[in-house]
Length: 186
Image 1 (cartoon, rainbow, N blue to C red):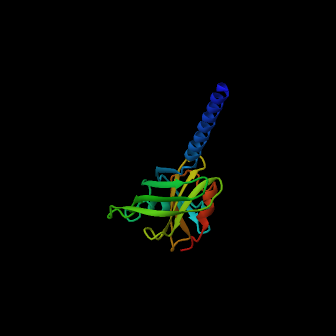
Image 2: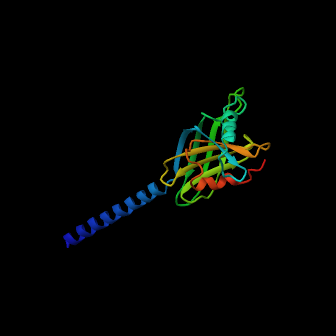
Image 3: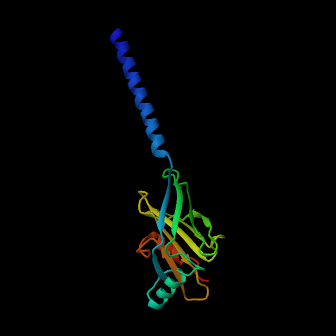
């Protein structure tokens, strides 16, 4: 009789510890992933108004000059993006901070980003944000939370091309490239 009671007690304790362990594991897995990523904008591309890559060498050279100018400096800047992603509820938020592109105004600008609903990666963007109204600001990270990429698309209303400054050496491959064509017209 005594053996049955101690056996039942041990079984109950073991079951309870498994249950508590499962709850703790669920809480750990369910916690949102919150990270801060820093990337440098090192690549320059010209894009057509429809978002496709502009192969014209003159347009690419003009873009490089434009995004290096003191009044529109994006090339070489570090973009700091903060994000929080709950993989279970799909609730996510992000923002990107970068120095003002105007060299005479040394301040940091923070742009809130909206989720873009891309497949294959987590993508966020702001299209003509109030802090930088002539730009798109984009950020993406892999589903494994690796490989962060930031981009700023500088819109040129007076030209047939726009200038993309990015940390991504191949920005026209992948899901985020589909967002480059949205409303690029000046």
